[in-house]
Amino acid sequence: MIAMLMAVATVAFQNPGAPSDSAVLKELLGIEAEIARANRECDYKYFREIEADEFIFTDASGGVTTKQQDLAGEADCRKNDAPSSVDEPRLLRYGDVAILSARNNVVLKNRAGESITRRSRFTDVFVRRGGRWLLVSGHSSRIPDAPPGPR
Image (cartoon, rainbow, N blue to C red; front, side, top):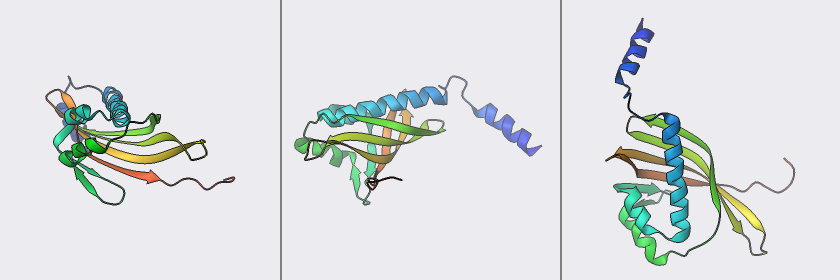
């Protein structure tokens, strides 16, 4: 009986006009691709638009950066052409709040000119406001390189 009441309550509170989780995931992955592009091209105009005023980022060592601090980094930004991709996405959605967790892969050149891939895990929290998703919080941690040799 309780399970049936919970199922009815869940259906009753769903917004029939709201996009599906797969549509939201696709939209957020598009935003993540734009974030990667903006990072490569030092496009701080995009960060001004996508980051909410209360945005905070926590790095792997526990440092916290606000939107204002992030935007101040524009003066030191260097453009690069390192290709990147996002995979293993997982979406948790609570109405107008979406949490995206995924793996980021960036291909860099080492000093010998060989391609190496740096991986990290990130979690970004978005809030839907004014008909669009805004980034309110993020965290990223580097995945250590695998030791050479067979596994």
